[in-house]
Amino acid sequence: MEPVPLTELVAATRAETAAIDGDGIVARRVSVDSRTLQPGDLFWALRGKKYDGHDYASEALRRGAVACVVERDSGQTFFGPRIVVDDTRKALGEFARWYRNKFEALVIGVTGSVGKTTTREMIHSALSKRHSGSRSQFNYNNEIGLPLSLLEMKSSDEVGVFEMGAARVGDIRALCQIAGPEVGVITPIGKAHLDTFGSLERIYEGKSELLAALPRHGFAVVVGDDPRMSEFAARAACPVIFVGEGPENQVRATEVEFRSGRLRFSVDGRRYELAVPARHYLTAALCALAVAREIGMDCDAIAEGFSRFSGAPGRCTVDQSSGCTIIDDTYNANPMSMQAACICLRDWPSGGQKLLIVGDMLELGSETRTHHQELGACVAAAKVDRLLAFGENAGDVSWGALRAGMRPHLVAECRELDALFTVLDCWLEPGDVVLVKGSRAMRMERVVQWIQQRGGSSRQEYTHPPGARAVA
Image 1 (spheres, rainbow, N blue to C red):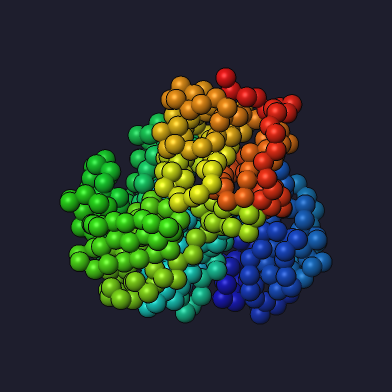
Image 2 (cartoon, rainbow, N blue to C red):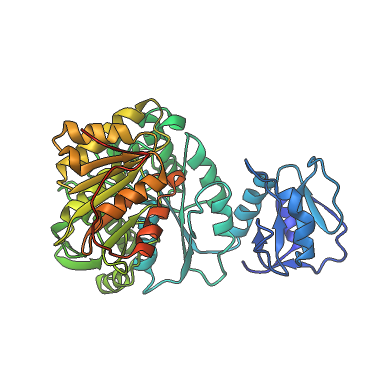
């Protein structure tokens, strides 16, 4: 963050101050975690489901915070320099909006059901040859994460690429009011957060709020291979660019090839190549290509930007240090991304077994059972060698796989993590390919870490341990 005088922050948030001496105090960074706070930071006390930042305000001051932003009705007594607001979460958004408007950078918002982070990183890579800029860090894409990402912008930035997540209609609209995007990118839309959105139709409604928020001088990029997007694109006041493989798209990929971790495709006669682990990265690449071309970049610069692309952790990242190949896709999961994972593993070259380890897909509401059974069928269709399902819905996944023809001795379901590890210890051999995926709350990265620590030991005689069930 560029240094901001506290007097300007107070004006931007319509706040009051207490125990602040002098007008020359500046904040150099906003921190919402007292454990990582550095001297000179401004501590922003936020209330969460498990923690209340107000409980750590005194600690933040001891660590060198210039002041704390706290709520007027926090119910606590504070000492030391503080900025007092009615609602710290709302004030954070107001401050981020004010800060964003200080700069001339082109702000690009990215939303959708799958591939948001990959698309964000792909856009950043494609633009990096010609334009300096910022992008969201980690999974910062909600009403807290987006403001914190915006506050990382610098005056030298020419572009900013920011991810926008949503769990209900109205979320994207609120985030757009903070970020003020001039460019909007919508990745593929599917069934995610069904328990809060309620239906697929409302997911489309919510994600398309990004289009309605764009100014006339901006532009949007959407997936044209989804016929429903034509209807929603009409709501945009700015031009909309359609990308995909169908002939109706303005940015159309042809001659698509994916072999051994290399994706190659052509657009308007120009060949592009990326080092990525799966074919489904094509959509992100086309979105990035469309953005780059629309702001005036030439093909050579875009191609060089693609060569710099590196996937974010937990999004199909590949590790081969453990005697087998681990495809770590543990960041999150929904029906659409699970289908892509099955195809990824199906197409992966391997002389050994292909194992798919899946955790529950969460937030699917009344359709939970159906989608887990359909996942099992998808696994069977992908001809995966072995399936290990983990979680409360593991039985539905295995049922779907068996019903679709997968042989019982190739399928196991576990409710306990230790049981999962016991099964894996029996199944895994050097040279195997293992793809691990599940919803964020399932913490499937623990499985990746276990495989990495275990190494590629030989398979043992297999018997089902307590907590694991052979499917027959």
